[in-house]
Image (tube, rainbow, N blue to C red; front, side, top):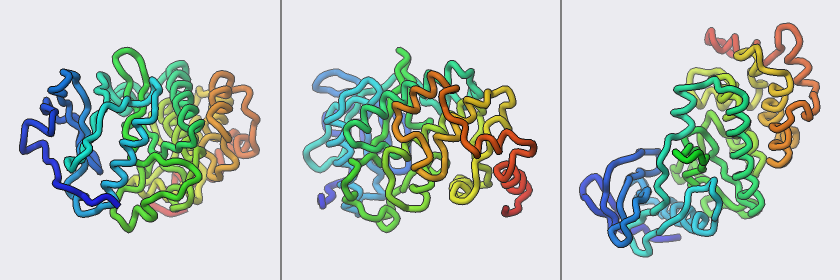
Length: 314
C-alpha cells in the first residue's frame, strides 16, 4: 500500500504545487474539485484533491492513485482527459476543465425531457461505456452528477473513483471496512447494493435509471431516503415509467425496464444491444413482466410504490 504523505488543503492556500487555485467547483464525498491554472503551461484545469478525513487510510490513497493511472490510459471524447498527477506526496489529480453543467442540473431544470433528447443522452453514454467495456473497465458510478454536458455539446464522464478492471479482485477488498463510499444508492445496481460482484451490466442498470429519470423526472423506486429506495430494488419491481408519463410508448417502457431488471442476466448483455434498441425501441422483445405492467392496476410494482407513500412496508 502507498504510505499517505502530507495532506493538501487548498482552502488554506492559493497554490497547490504548480497550480494556482481559481475557485471551488465541487465538494464531494471523497474529495474536492477546484478550478485552477497550471502556472507552467497556462492551461486551466480541474484539480481533484482528496478529502482530508481519509488521510489516515492508506487504502484511500491507493484508490486515488489507481484512478489517476486508469485515466492516464484512456483517450475518448466522452471521458474527462487526464493532465497530470503529482509524483510526490501532495496527492492531487489534474484533469481537463470542462465548461458546462452536469445532467443533474439539466434534469432539475428541464425533466421530463423529450424522447429525442433522452435518446441522444442514451446513445452518447452507450458509446462511451462501450469504449470502457471493450477495455474490460466497469465504471460503476453512472449518475447525472457524473455526466457533464459541455458548451460544445459533448457528454463527458467524470469521477472514475469507483471504476475498476473487470476480472481482477479489487485491491480494496471491503469498502465498508475502509470507510470509503460504496457508490450512489439511487443509481447502484441490485448486485452493488447487496455487496456482490459487479460487472459491465451494473453500468447498463445505472444507465437505465438515468434514462428513466430523463423521461419521467422521477426515480423508479419510492422511499424516504436513498438507502431505503436502494433496498427496495432487492425485492420489488420498479414503478413502470408510464405511471409517471402516460404518453410514453410501451416500446420505450420496455427498453427502460429491461435495462433495470433485477437479475443481470435479464438485462441487455452489452451496451451495443442497448444502443440498437434506443435507435429502434420496437426491436426490444416484450417480456412477460412488461405485459403485466400494461395490465389494469400495473401489478406489484405500483402496489409497493403506493404502500411506500403511506409509510407501510409491502
